[in-house]
Image (cartoon, rainbow, N blue to C red; front, side):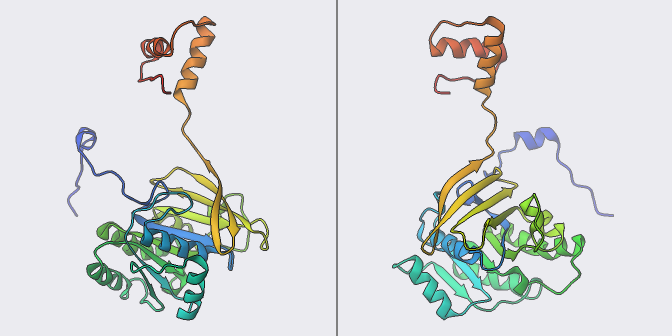
Length: 282
């Protein structure tokens, strides 16, 4: 029996931990992620844009990126196709973006390949593997097997302080919850730190929705529009926490019907009545 290691609530709450580090602000943290979509929906283009944005320190879907090296495993492509796509996305090459056409599978050398690359490029922030199927071992697709297979990559992302994105496919069957459409068992979804699903209402449409969920991000639905080869953000539907200030004012007005005074006086009254920290800028 292994010794049970615990920490008290008090110890956890009084310890100063490092804040979550994002490769893409409020969208892609350090950890393991899945980007899924139907075949030819444009997920590889989106992944390439992500790599370029990180390598150049440019915005991705209007989100600020942390600049660093990016490694893109294009396991279903050729260098000629990569070149063609790059020219459609940018005129300026980056010396921080690298491509590989072959990789070992998970548990059979892939982790060592990424670790070695990190030792040679210490500013590595992002690894994209396109597709997961190409590094996936032919095991049964049970929850336990899928979870166990991805666990080494999840641990590696944490160990190297990088983001690893696995490009993956969707089932043919539709579902009201887009994350249930990801191919494989729910063990994949359960293991990773975040999920992105790119959906089009019609294949020929130039519009799509990127559904986002994760341990360190708010659930979001990003409405995207295709402009040439690029995906651009059209709208951001983010599940935001309720505005406590609005609820407090509502409850106050229910009680006393009217209030006359400055914003500062109102905030003082709310603090006395409901506690919390209210500011005139709210």
